[in-house]
Length: 189
Image (tube, rainbow, N blue to C red; front, side, top):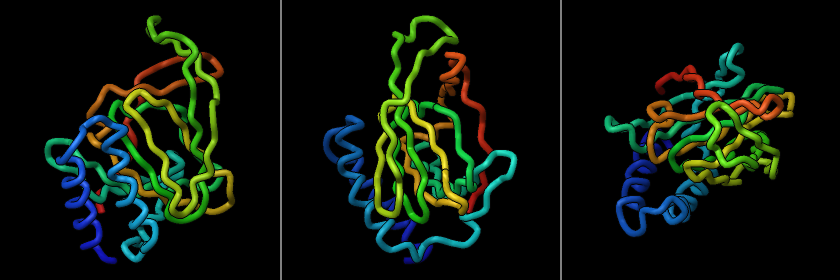
């Protein structure tokens, strides 16, 4: 696979999301096989996808972002021992492991979300995301990521809409705080 692999992937992504049920679960069911193919043949991966920002703890390389903020495709490299706080996406999203292992943590919300700035969340499940392992996120799902290893990990992320264009939240489970999600540093491939 080459850069053409990304173009083909995005074309296939558009095709499977244009036809049929538009509910996030149905869309993600149709996208999962496309992600599995991208993980099976990683010849599209470039060395620069492994770059990460030391301050941020990870690096985001945009592989596709449509003008209308649809079909965001990113390669994300998580630095050793680094991660990101619990957050939501406000759109459907999927991740497939490409290289290394990262831990995806799904969080359960215990409150009803009616008190602004407050969120009582707890760790509900952890998944080791390695090559070919796919995880899915509904718009309101809360998750975090960490790389417990001593080497970078790389994963491919796909979103129905560009999360940075949406009103997302980040969560502090210890202090039970919900706040606007910070903007992340990103680069274009």
